[in-house]
Length: 429
View 1 (spheres, helix red, strand yellow):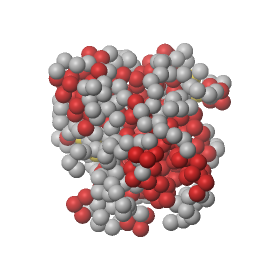
View 2 (cartoon, rainbow, N blue to C red; view 1 turned 180 degrees about the vertical axis):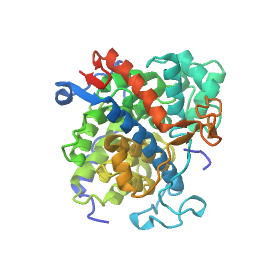
View 3 (cartoon, rainbow, N blue to C red; view 1 turned 60 degrees about the vertical axis):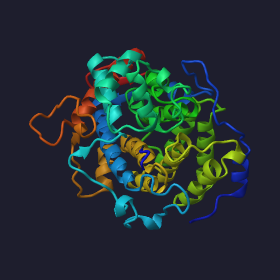
View 4 (cartoon, rainbow, N blue to C red; view 1 turned 45 degrees about the horizontal axis):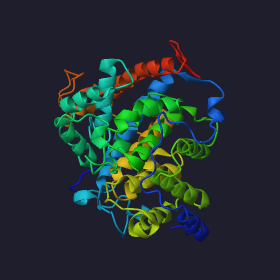
């Protein structure tokens, strides 16, 4: 995210119906803590048992998948923000930034970027404080110490406000931060969902202030939606079709958001278009419909288009990749990379989510023979963080150790939620 920087057509009745939703541009505030609008009795009615070793491996896959998706998506970031957009036929062609081929990007070590480094900062702060509930001053002090370069849009505004003594959540107040409806929080806070597996309400609670460090209104709801998806990933049944389970958690996550939010309008629009399509490769038509509704015809539909780093259009492309990718990691990353606008961010988020669902085995199966580095170069963007690999001149941490530290924080979330922590895993009520 930087400021420098076809199968069958959709059924006309679907588009017409979606157009009747009305304006949800700002969304209404609601009392906290959040309560779901509709019953989520199915996942809540029984305990969830998670194996510690297996879930820790999935957390490692989440970081690996997120980095691959992030750097692949960066090839097209900001390149196509109006028609003509990329299509499947463009994959592999030298049409990316600076003429780079649009293709999967592997690294050793993996380089930090804004899709992973602020979440890494939050993990550091949580680990050091041994809490899931960061206070405003803790976030301010953590950002002042570690978040100084490689930040843009609302992150940049919030960081500047902190230097003036303003604490979160005032750093996202629209009167102080005119970029609070941009994409920022929806690519920096998904980690809180993974730290509260199967506990979506608790995930929202611990993510509330980090989200509102940079986001308000429908942008905050979009970030909450991502947090919820990462929490609900623990409820996905591996014995059921992945496509059906993804649709289920999308619906359940949406149920926590206010009906009046523009974020819900986007989710409804993309989900309805996907369900109406008989071709999982017909994602391009839905992407073009997104452009019409939220960019080209935004004003006549009661919306405002705020540029290629805005929350709404990129929420739509990320969800587009998740749904039409149908749980296939490589396909999800391809669609996200080709979708347009701020294409690294939604791609990184949904690549992380699909990798969390499928684990390391599915990542390896997607790229036979490829060597996956476990090393992470966080000092590329956050050089003040500890070097946990002092004997390695090129990296400062490993995803194996990152996942282990996350699993220790899951212990806290499960205990707070009234669950049981054992040496082998967690029982989540």
